[in-house]
Image (cartoon, rainbow, N blue to C red):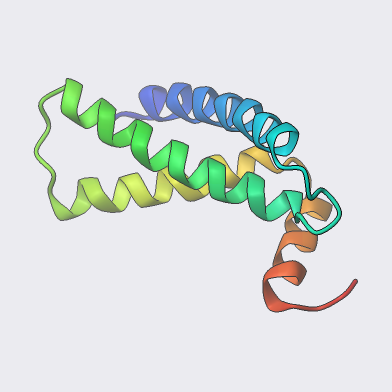
Length: 101
């Protein structure tokens, strides 16, 4: 995967994951206890990894260890780009660690 393809896929996945996150927020009724940052991160990781897997299937690329690593890294990268700003990332890390901040 070249850099141009990576950046195009990253922008597509981050946009798609923000739309899916908004849909999940509208579907779930218990909005008081739902950490939206972790929801966005989870949706983005799934969309980024699955989207990269679909790209590899369509280009007939074999699923080697490096391609699987790229799938995981694309999931995390799309998660970071969908949570815009350092404050959102910091708040997510605090929520994962269980700190109130």
